[in-house]
Length: 258
Image 1: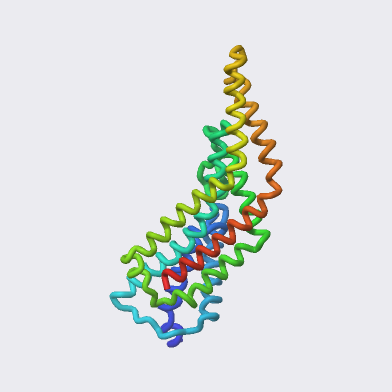
Image 2: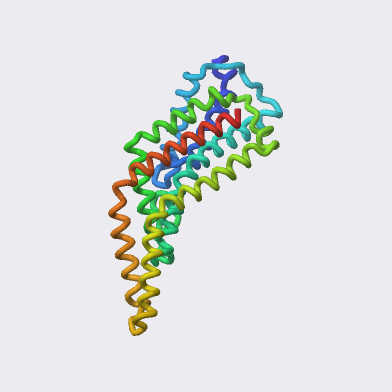
């Protein structure tokens, strides 16, 4: 009992990092998962992490302990948010396509995140979640947060890294990469829809009696859906490359925080 009470502050710090990671990370932050399940999973992962990293020097509970808790919460949030950014790629890509096809105003409620999202963005997001689970990506996320203690111990230098700007620079570059990846994923569809717009413009000049507002939007929707379902079989390779880049960025983030 004395040993448990002595190392309880260490366990609480580990629990804070893992819980904050579950709050924002993909898969584990879904609205459909109950709070009791998330807390129970966080406790279970905390015990596994404690057994894997062992017991270091006990952290005293003094005036700096509140800062230690805040630091661990920030570490978990930054790691989880970085992973979540790469899942927003498919939603941004879907928003680009919806805007070109005419679905820009037809948003729908996403039952996973609990917010409104574009139609094709929601479709691509659910497809990405399905492929991520098939590839056991959730296991890799759990492994990443558990093995983060090997590189980011409880006595890490997060605040100094935030002060010197390395964390903000990393997040800014990650945002840039996310938008570039989203545009790359939608480039074929946007190119096809642009050619459709050019063809409709030429039709309007040669045959002005046609009402393009009536026939233009259905044509763009049909062609866009046809191209989408033609290239949907290649999404597995795109998402696999996306997930590889996500874990690569997570490794870079862990090295920066260290």
